[in-house]
Image 1: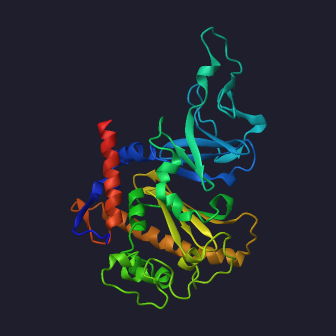
Image 2: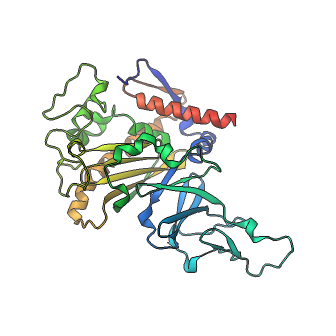
Image 3: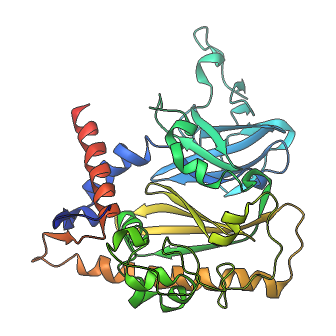
Length: 379
């Protein structure tokens, strides 16, 4: 049994809107953890690039060779001008050129030209390469780490979460649809909402029809001592209900099952991988969905949602809408209630909340936040 055996205090309410606290969390977590910023297939040619945002930091991610990606801060070494003003593009002739004084860099970040600069004996171009950023990938997802020396490599950071989706050929999937959604809430609010199903019977009635266990306000029957499945075919372990095949409004598939999945994974109908605070991936027998959380301020985030299918899959507009409809509804419901939660935290009378038994994942998340902040303060 994983439930909390006593009422726990939540994080201080001010931590969800205070600008100084927001900066502390950026420095303690977002600038030190591995953060997903996109998919490898978005960079289709050598020299293709996009600018990723992590907190207040802007990072250029570019492809220097077919299997090699590299990342730099979007900052010229001359006087700090922004190198890329658009969100994506193609570097011409394998050169990165500053729009201010045309200092020129190779795709590897080396300074190779400083047009019209008057020569001095003490200038060494090798001292002024672009500021590098650590970059790794998993399952076709691109991750960045802004710390000078990451605590761990990406695989160690992901740990067992990466194993949950090992049967899905994630690297061979392609995004067939993306939606970006602004939400007026602190990043922790959205992750807390994702981490519990206490709200599901009230906020997600459509999802509860597909996932019968959620009608009990929990993810798993292990959270309900003595409970036995009450739905024909329901295993009581967070699987889809009887007769349900996947996450669509009617629970039925119109796309083929992704190759490589076993009977148990097909029967489950859904498998989650959670990358604390910043991203989760929801894998179904016929498609995969990723949701990235991008903090844009103390009380605002942007959600980036991708629907993924095997490369080369042709999908009709009705079938695309079919796999998007339920998730879009659930996310919108979550967005709305997260904004309600955010607004209520501004009360002068509300210093902190409390957690009930089935909110054990929130407690773990809060302990993670506290530990990371304590490490920052001790540094």
